[in-house]
Amino acid sequence: MIDAVQLQSTLINLALNARDVMGEGGELLFSIANVSINDSYMAQG
Amino acid sequence: MSLEARRRAFEPFFTTKPDSGGTGLGLEMVYGFVRQSGGHVTLYSELGHGTSFGLYLPAVRQANNMGFIALEHPKDPISLLGRGEAILIAEDNVRVRKLSIERIHDLGFETLEADSDDQAYQLLKDGAKVDAGVF
Image (tube, rainbow over all chains, first blue to last red; front, side, top):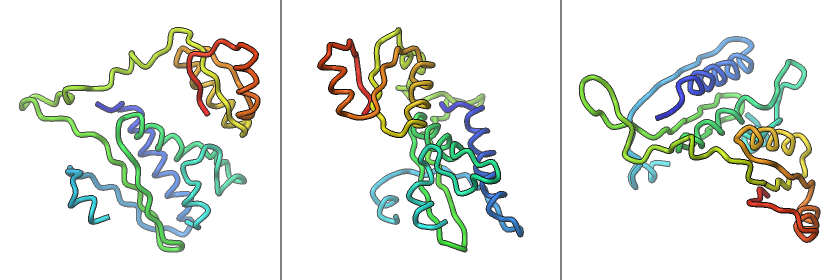
């Protein structure tokens, strides 16, 4: 299990970085998915 | 991101915005958190187009409709705490060294420091009592 507070900090961190580098606006997208890390996933790079 | 920024994105105290309050600890924290959680981080970036980060975290298995349980072997954070064991930290970057000492100390270990491998070797030769080293 992961730490909820640290996950929150992490997402805020990434959002702040995105904001800081998109002074004139831009697109910030968060998405979430279940993935299986197997050979074919790795092969997609 | 430039090649330089991509290479050093997760490095402690590396920042592309020192004048606007960048600490260089933001992405370092992201990387540390994900790695400590048993996952990994990917970074893909094209200069002038954008950047994407992938945070891969270990999944939990669904136990029942009420919620989730952890996988069989969750990392017990308690077991990572020290009981005063001595850790020797050899690091030439003074800020990284200080940060390492602070964090390792907070985990319950005593710390010894050296600013080079040579100095660490000298400490050990002089009989410093050390349980483990970070180089």
